[in-house]
Length: 50
Image (cartoon, rainbow, N blue to C red; front, side, top):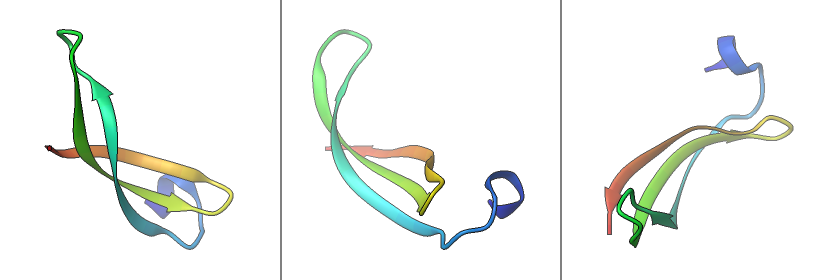
């Protein structure tokens, strides 16, 4: 992670978001990502649909 995005205090975060599916419907999903001050969110990954 540091080699690509730089040094920082990286923290693993998770949250819930309302996403739009390919068929036009919407559904909630659990997302995981890494975040550092001054760099922001990187590597957002959808873990599961709720």
